[in-house]
Each structure stands twice: as structure tokens, then as C-alpha cells.
Amino acid sequence: MTTVANGVNVQALLEAREVLKGAPEAAQFTWRASAKWQGGVHSTIKVQSFFGLGEEQNHKEDWAFEADHPEVFAAEDSGITPIEYLLVGLASCLTAGVASVAQNRGIQLRSVESTVEGAHDIRGILGADSDVRNGFNDVKVTFTIDADASKQEIEALVAQSQKRSAVFDALTNPTNVTVEVA
Amino acid sequence: MLERGEVANSWRRERWDSLRLLTPNWQSRLPGLRYEGRDPDGYMTVGEVTEFIEHFAKVSRAPIRTGVNVTSVRRAGDGYHVTTSHGEIHAQTVVIASGACNEPAVPQFDDAVPASVEQLTPFDYRDPAQLPDGRVLVVGASATGVQLAAELRRSGRPVTLSVGEHVRLPRTYRGRDVLWWMDASGLWDQRYDEVEDLTRARRLPSPQLAGTPERTTLDLNALDAMGVELVGRWAAVRDGRALFSGGLRNVFSLADLKMERLLDTFDEWAKTDGFEPEASPPERFAPTRVPESTRLQLDLRSGEIRAIVWATGFRPNYSWLDVPVVDTKGQLRHDGGVVDSPGLYALGLPVLRRRKSTFICGIEDDAREVIGHLTRYLAVRR
Figure 1: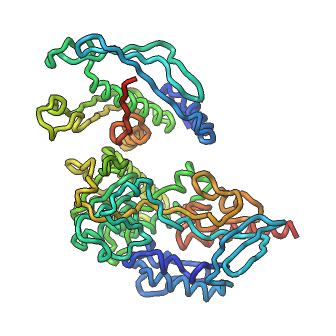
Figure 2: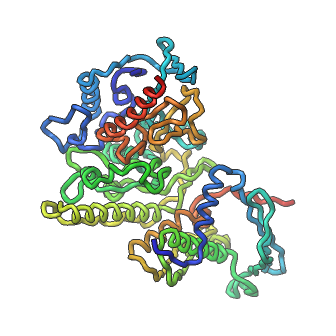
Figure 3: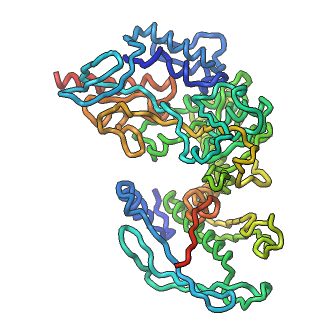
């Protein structure tokens, strides 16, 4: 097999898969984010530590994200809209999946670009119509991929990346969510 | 040979009325027994399969003791102690041939379904008349699910089919039964130690096929044309509502792409093996049509759904096997039928030694090799 360089260490992932098959407790991760209100509808979210492989872990850096709403929502637009973070998560997760699957299948990628669109009827969140849901009605992702592969192989990469995507699953399947006051 | 009931017991008691074999008659070949009827391209009914197996039991003069239920097998001395409903047996070797489909596998949330909704498994289901009038939710779109969804729709009932990952196949391809291609191209002969991902191959759902005299394809497009409503995989129950996955489009893509790859393999084989001149040209099938919008939830208490049919697969039952050879997923630990305990063997499990292991025509090669191992084991110990 010719070696391809997509920059994904698939070998490490495959080894982890084998190890975790026999050690499900080490596979239990907890991802965290903490948010702080900044006034108005603006908040700052920090992501730094997570738990996994049986112990506390840290990102190499502390990451901070600004979330606000645009001026058409009569806000300051100091950051992107929370629901846009869902699009950020979906696009980045699927893109990582495409790269990993391509590496595993020996497909050299030259460029992977995508646009994500979420159709949203804001009458839901405004309480203007109780029949309209708050969240997206439809999400559409369009990939443009240049790679040493047939159209069919590229479509298979995109399909497989959805099959193994944490964010795609979290968006398409219901998840239990508990919100409490400490 | 110990049989808990009669010869071909599960074919007599655990099949619905309209079921036919997925393999064409000519593929029903066992050592010394071939199909000799007038319809080689047809598919046997449940009654015909029962007769076929009974006939083989006679011509092979298999030493069968019927009505003997095995309640325990445990290691004892240099062999196994077998407890049955008719006494105890000591055996130096044991071959487990109880199959992979001893009981329906039903997801955990069946107990969240309100009592007003009738629930059936393929073991309970016989024919549509058994079900109340009104909409039926069929869960699972493999061979069982698509067949029952079609039959229930034809009975006049509205049907909703919950679709997860599935295997799409046309019934015929380039003028031949698709299973002819699996056989002739050598795909079915692919060995378990050559398969790239054996765990996955062994868990592969049954293909969307039905054996009908018309040899028609029963894929999701066919069901959609019949008016069956497609929804995503049943993911959870919340507040009496069934919640379905929004990822339906991707399971369609995965199945369409896999089918295309398989057909490419057939075409490639046809070209290199000089089969092509007599075959009709390669065909490609329309992608699975994606509904304009699919329901993401269904209120189980509203009365809209009157019955649920769980076509969510089957699992083996090894509760009688008191030897530590069953993994945490309930599957037997074995290497090509050689179980992880000396003198213990298995036959008739998915991809036991070849892709064809669970088909009637697949048992002969597997049995020869597994029994070869068994006789060598006995010879060394003697």
C-alpha cells in the first residue's frame, strides 16, 4: 500500500481501539466547558480540562470562546450565536472524520472544504408560534473534496465520517440533558 | 445428534407463514442431496424447507434423537458432561449446532411502550390477521423487517418502518439471482481468516431480500412505492414518544454505496472470468429516495400505532452452556468453529469459516474442516 500523508496518526487510533476493547472503563470520557455571563446576551466559554483514560487531562492551552447574538437580534455581536457553535462542531467533526477515514483507506487528500447550513425558524425561540420548534428544522452539509480517489470513494469517505461522528450522532439522536442550579 | 423437538424444529415453530428461503432452490445442496424439482430458480416455502431437511435426515441416516433437550453442558474429566431432558451423557467432544437465532433480540425500551400497543417478535408473528387494524410500526429493515412491512402494508394497514443500518441488494442482477453472483464470483467462499473485519462481517444484518415467485426486489424504494412510511432508527422513548434518528439519509448512502461496490466486484469478476458474453450488461439502480421530511417522533399513546413488530434481529442462547466460552456480548468464542475449550466445536454460525457459513450450501465445507479438527483431536488423545 502506498503511504499517504493526511497528517492523521491512524495507527495510534487503531491501537487505542484494540486496547479499549478490553478496557471499557478507560474509554469513559467527560468533556467540559464553563461559561460566564458578560452582560446582555454575551458570554465567554472556557474549555480547558477533560477526563479520560482514567484520569484528568488538560488541553495544551486554555481555550476561550465568545458567544453573543447579532445586531439583528438587538445584541452587540461580540461573538457567534450559540446555535452556530453547533455548526462549528458538526463541520469540524465531519472534517476530522473524512481525514481519518481517508488516511485509513490510503486516500491522499488535497483539499477538504465544507459549508454547513442550519435552517432555523426563529418564531420558536421568540415564542411567536408554539408549533415551531426552537432548534434547527434541517441541517445541510456540503463537502467539496479534492483527493486521489473516485467520486464513489469520496462519497464513501463522507458517509463513513458521519457513521463515526460524535457530533452527527449528538445532533441526529436524542440525548438526555440535565440542567441544574448548583 | 440431539434435537430438542422434531427434525427442522425451528422451521416448524419459529417462522411466519409466508416466509420463503432467501436462497434459490438450486442452491439448496447438501452432501448427497440436490434440489431436483421443476423450479430451480424458485424459493422454498417453510413447509418445503421442513420437508427438505427431513429428507436429508433420512438419506444421510443421521443418528438423531428427537425430543431431547440439552439443559447443561459442562467440562468433566477429559470431556463433557451433558445433561438432557432424557438423562445424562458423557462425551469426549461436543459440536454445538444450535444456531445464532435462538431468540429475538429486542431493544431495552420495549417496556416503555404503553400496554395499549400490541408488541410482537418474528417468533410470535404468523400472518397479518393476528394484528389489530390500524398503523403498525415495524422496527428494523433487514430481511425480516422489509418482508413483514410489505406483507402488513398489503393487508391494507398503514405501516411505518424504522430503518437503521441495512444491506441493500437487488433480487436479480444482470439476469441472475443476486445470490448466484455471491456464489459464482467466489465471494461466499471468502474465508473467515481473509475477511478484513471479522467482527463486523459476523454482525452483518441479513440483506433486504425476499424469496417470491416474481423474483422482485424488496428494497426501501419498493416499500416507499407501496406507501410504507420510512423513519430513522428508533433511538429512544421519552414521555411515551418514540424518538427516531435524523440520520436516515446517511444510512441510505451507506447502503447504496456498499451495494454499488458489491456490483462493481461482480462486474470485475465477470470480465476477468469470461462470463460476460452470456450476461446482460451491468445495471445500476436508482439511489434510495430520501423522503421530503421524515417524522422524528411518534406518540405511542395517541392510538395511531396499534402494534409494533420488532424485527431487530436474533441472538443465540447459551444459557445451557456451563463452559466459560461466551463473551460479554453473548457470542461464542471460537476460531473457525474450534471453540476455546478442548474438544468443543461449533457449526452454523455467521461467517464461521466462510461468508457462506449460515447458508444451506455453506455447511458442507465448514463441517468437513471442523470435523477434521475434531477427529485429529480424538486421534491424538487415543
